Length: 547
Image (cartoon, rainbow, N blue to C red; front, side, top):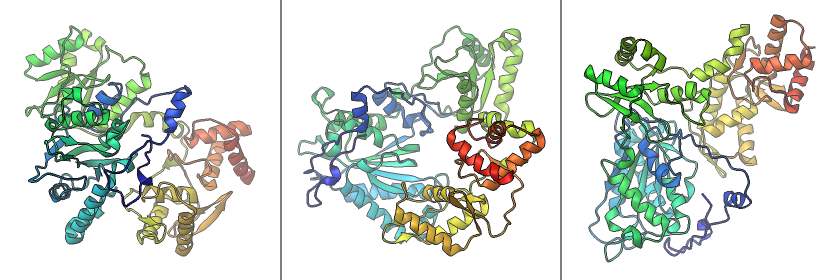
């Protein structure tokens, strides 16, 4: 999304007076000179197809590779209409809209099934965002029980305008459509959405949610002119989005249940003879679950059946054998694989296998791809190693350039060091960024972090270019190294790498230095056996310590 000149406007101007001119987009410049391009087609953010189906159809030409949900026919885009008693004269948000958003926010955190979910609220201009933010703050100040519940959520709630929300995501997004109607009762769309490429901003706004989106609007799709009379694409897309959000049976979510005479057709007929309700081709992208058995309430699928007879083009064996299954499992699908040759050899045995799987409870499984690739070195050579365990992110550190970090920083650092020691300064800095509003740590913020670490007086050692911190409760001995950590080679403490090198030499005997380095990287699951100048420099430093 290209930046606009929105924030260059003076504060004395009303939102409707501001001229929104797009700044030059780096992406557009790159496309202009015809740089090579690669589109990332997999979509993982939205855990339900209804949350991304609109964008996929209208902005990506149905090219996104989306995995179906077990309740894929039901939309998780909820529409709440706010009828106004009088005309809304400008872009300021009304009390009725604020009340609806505040009530919605409160409903989420008083619902036992949703109270642990993260929430984001998006408005279409800064004036509305500020008003909503103040209302939520007042709500939490008056309701201490609600405030305590909200504080326990890992990701903090936010209220942001359309210009500020790119890159953000939350479990539940509340989208405030704060536009007004004119004296003729027609929708008035102003601001960035009404400018050239406004549809891009709408796409950003409607694709931020992971589990649910709630649309709060004072206008209906019927308040717009006919499509042929709307020349602005942003306004037209907003009308279509409101149509999408307010429809109970949306055509974008209807699965193609066409049958052919493939093996899926015969398995479907065999299951239907036994009384099961079976649907075909579940999914709204290239990836589809061949068959699915629907539950008695007709609102979710009890079992998905994947058949090997129709491999997908341009998808690797790795994707089809590991990634697909892993993602479907995370979406709580219970899946059984059926191979054509098995069905042809023994039809009854295959059907019995499907029914047996149907009757088993859903059990989350480990990511088979990780087990296959990352754990291999430890299994083959029996190294004394263990998986790297991070502290669950539950503490959120607020940072302000004037006030610095809040009191939670000290507790967060101690928690991380106790769990992840030995830990480098850079890794510790990353943990603080992961649990704070900091996207890029300034020199002032870094200085504040260093002073906090010094005041904690943690056991510290020096490792080449940075400090490594140790738990107060343990010693500085390392008897095993940790794998699968995604740490940079310079952020793996030298003690762990020394431990790995010594085990390799003990098990495999004398090795050439280059072979030792490759085996060390393999054992650490660090890019398998890739050696480059940077890795060699780091490993040379450590090798000289054990010679």
